Image (cartoon, rainbow, N blue to C red; front, top):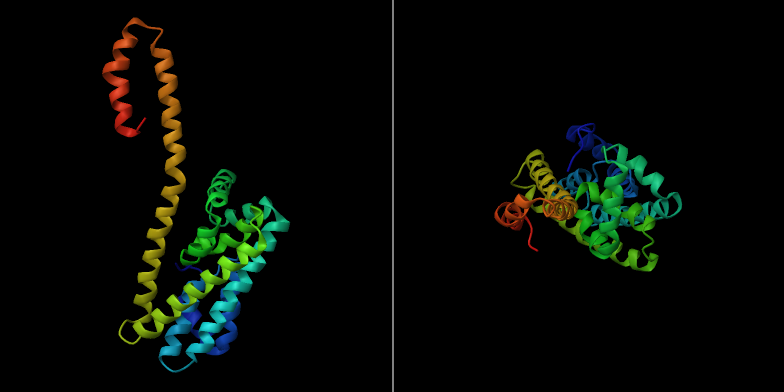
Length: 236
């Protein structure tokens, strides 16, 4: 998923000029919690490796170690800085305190998977490290899933650009990955939003039924209208 304030052309120019250093630091900063298009940087690095301008092994190493070190920085930022740091990062994406609190609640129950698979979704890649530190995830456990996820993500992104770049233009490849990132982000947003919505509907139903019992016509409405309608929305 890319960011409009850094164009693909600018990323290519920076990669031409600074090579491996740009790839390493760009990915490291994104994983530390700074909104830089690390995925696009990785794809550009893999594309340049495919064209022979850069070494694939060094691009892969820069992407992997940049991701691991950046997420470690993010972990300790979240551990020491607390919720205030995440709220400041969240403001860049218009995320409220409630959004972050809900994400933290989900993260605590799925920390291992969030650290590993969060690498493949831009917004989660930025938040995973700080969220792990804030949530008190044991550092050794975090480091294991962080490193495993970094290796899997780096191999996927650089390998995709290295091999697909020979027959797919770079801008189209970045566009495909951007659309995939948006779809994945919407799926995560739905996963975070639907359970609270269902809980609200259940609460509303309980209140509605408790009020209906005080009216003679309410008993009929309860049987004919409320119960069937709510059962279509949520399973009791």
